[in-house]
Image (cartoon, rainbow, N blue to C red):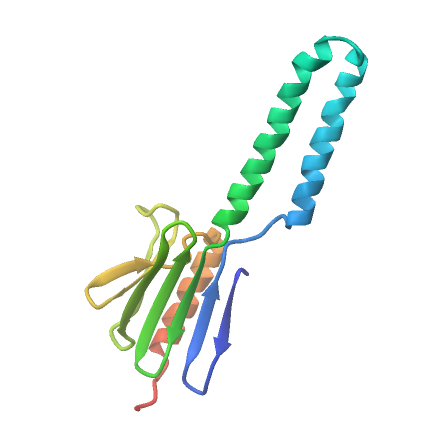
Length: 164
C-alpha cells in the first residue's frame, strides 16, 4: 500500500501517504525509446526522399509529447501527506509541488474520520473532521486502500492517549 504507519515514540505515530508509482523513470525512458525506434521503422521506406522530412516532425512531436506527459506525471506524483498523531494532537500536512503545503491541526480527542461512499470526488472519499473543518486525506489512493485507511484511522484515533 502506498502509505505507512511509523511509531515515533510510545504514544506518537506518523502516517505517510503517497501516490502509487506504477512505472519507474528508467522504464518510462525505455517506453519513449521504444516508441521512437518503432516510429522509425515506417520511415525507413522513405529514406532518401523528401517525404522523410515531412513525416519526421510528426514522430518527433509524438516522442516529445510522450516525454512531457511522463514529466508532468512524475511532477504530480511529488505530492504526499503526513498525518502526525501525538498524545493530544492530530496534525495533517498535505504537500503539493504545485500549490505548496496545506496544514490542518486539531485536538486528537475531537478528530474523527468520515467516509463519503458517494458524493465525493472519488468513491469512498475519506476526510478528517475537527476544529470546525473537514479536510481530505488519501484521495489519490485506490478505493480499497481508502476503505482500509478509514478503518485504520478510526482505530488509531479511538486509541487511548496518555495524559501529558
